[in-house]
Length: 172
Length: 238
Image (cartoon, rainbow over all chains, first blue to last red; front, side, top):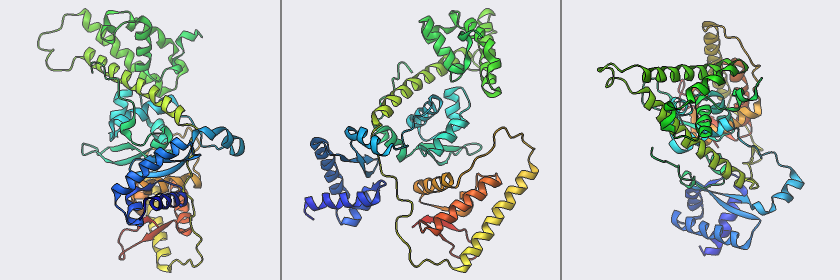
C-alpha cells in the first residue's frame, strides 16, 4: 500500500477504536509489517506535532491511540467540562511510583518501602485502572503482583515505563 | 492543639523522620547522633488524632527508634553482632529508599500536571448494534448454576468467619463493576467465570458484579463459552 494510504488507514482505524489499538493488530488488518506501521506512526506523530494538529497520535506501550493536543484544552473545557481530570492523592502516588519503578511488585514489598499499610491506595489505584494484578509471586503465600497499566501511561502522558524520569539513586 | 504535632500531614513514620532530618539539615546516616529521636517522640503527642492503623505505625517506629538509641548507650555483646542485621543500618537503608520514591512521586506529579489537557476517547461501551441476538438456553442455565455456586461459597465464608464490625457502608455500583470486568479482561484477555469472582467474598459485590457481567454479555461486548459440560465457563471479549 502507498504510504499515504497507510497513514489514512491507521487514522480511520484509530478513530473507530477510540481506545488504544495494538500495532500488531493494525499491521495484520492492513496487511503490512509491524515495522512499517511503527515507522509510519512515528512519522504521523512528528508531522502532527509540527503542524500543530488538534488531534495527535499517541503511543501507549505497543499500541496507538488518538488524543487531543493540549493547546486546545481551554475550548474543550468550555464546551464539555470533561470529568476525567482527577488528581491522585499523595499516598496513592507514592504507592504508584513504587509500583512503576519496581514492577512487578507485591503489596508486602510496597509496604516495606513506604513503612505504612497501602491497602486503601492499592484499591483506589486498581479502581482507577492505573494498576492491575499481573500474577502471583512464586514465594510463600503466593502474594499478588502489581503492574502499571495502559491507563497509567495515558494519565502521565508517557508512551512506556522507560520514559519515567530516572531515579535519583544517590549512594543506594 | 499545637500545630507542630499534627501527624496527619505525614504519610507515615518514615515521612515524618525525613521531614525532621531535612529540617535539621543533617545526613540520613547521622540520624542517631542527633536529636531526631527526641523530636520524633515529641510528635507522639498527636497520636490520639489518628486512626488506629496509622497511629500504630507511628508507635511502632517510636519503639524502634528508642531501641536503636538504647543500643548505642550499651556496649554490644560480642557474639550478637554478626547474627542479626543492624537495626540502625536497616532503618537508614529504609529511609534512603523511601526518600528516593518520595522524590520519584514528586516527579510523577509533575508529569501528571503536564499530561493534563490531553483527552482520549474512552472505548465505546456497546460498539455495534445487535439486531439478531440470542442466547442458547443451555448457557443461561449454566451461568445461573455457576453463579449460585459462587454465592453459596460466599455465604459459607461469611458464616464461618468472625463477625467483623463494618465501619463503612459498602458502596458497589454496576457501572464500576462493568469497568472492573472490562479492565480485567483488557489485561488478561480471557478469564474463567470462577476466577472473575475468586477474590470476592461479599455477597453484595458478587451480585452486582454478576449483574454487570450479564449486562456486558447482553450488549454483545463479551461472550461466555463452555466447551463441555462441567468445564469452566470462559469469559472473553467479542
